[in-house]
Image (cartoon, rainbow, N blue to C red; front, top):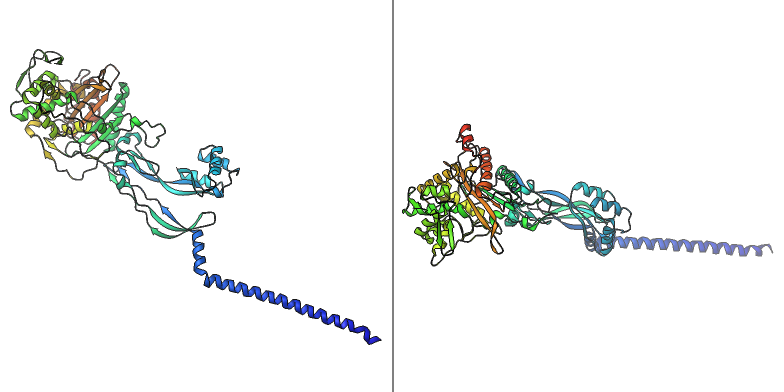
Length: 580
């Protein structure tokens, strides 16, 4: 029957249409469910969990970084920088992000100046860490070249590096810092807290590789360290260093020291030592060269103390400039100990005792005055006690105080044996003679006003001693100390060096202490040269010529008017001579 053949087809059509509608409903339902889920998730993320998720995002991308503080500048009295901090870059790595097999590491090792194998080994060794230093405080150009290699996990940050423009010339005064800019020696150590700044903090946004995208907020600005202005005059420091280095080299000496003081303020204008070191390159640094020997090393002052003994005699009122001392027969015996002069000078006044540097003459005066009088004057001049300069490692020396003085102890004290001083203390004592009897506190800081001093000797006594020192240079053991167009005064000294087993027979320290211009002194200078090996070892032969060159040039630099005409200066400068 025709009608019966069409039924199945109609049923199939209706079934297909139903299936199609069902599938459409499923897809639509799934779509609506997905949209609902996404909508709910969006609401959850933006409303319910917004604060939590924001915090988690910040934890992963926002960091607080330290802002390094600029260390204070150290400068000389005229503002010339002696120690400054310059911005540099520190390269570091996150080993967990760096592939130790990356071929580019070979180029990075070359840029950093290290072996490729050690670089790869370090990255593998610390693969579980997120931070290791690769190279600290390099020039920005090196950092840029390293970062340009595009190696994952390699980063840079800004730091500061200490630089010393005068190098070894001011090394013993200024000192140096370690890599973290913490003072290790000298002024850098003594004033570390003053010079050190306070680091700041800032909040930054970083990407997933740890690179800073932008600065978000300054939390606390870095506070730079305070600056320091030293009393050192860099011109005089260079001059002193040059001359001291030359004499140590010429005489094949073990070392040397030179100190220069301003007579009217107690400021240290120059302080140098040999050997020295370069604080900008400490790869060859020797520990023995670190000491500022002008302050830390002690020595017996020898004949440079004789003017102080004469000052004690004049102050006592029992002696005048014209008082006579019989030094015959040219020696004195104290049991097994004998004091000698170069020859028998016979009857001498106080001036001749200084000019000829008579041990017998000053020892007889000391016997008459007594050891306690000498000691008291030496102490008033600053010997045997700290100078108060505030420099680390200062040695105060030995100034004996005996309950009962033996004659030999009084005698040796009068010409500088049986006691010890540093070069700065000796310069301070001569400063008092130079300025008319005022002891000023010594300072390595520039003084804007003259400090309060203490009178320890009368102008009459110091004036008389200066006249003696003038003759000691023009006619006595210090002839080679005459500084050109200026008249000077001073005293030579030659002492045996002390070794592990006592006095060394053939090793000497050559010393000269003096002032100029002698009629109105501006500068006091002390020079000490250790163990000259050239055959000359007397203070008048080795140290006095250094004084002449340094003082002549220094006074010209300070615009001090010359006292002598050119012809007078030429006739005053000796060709040879001078011991002490």
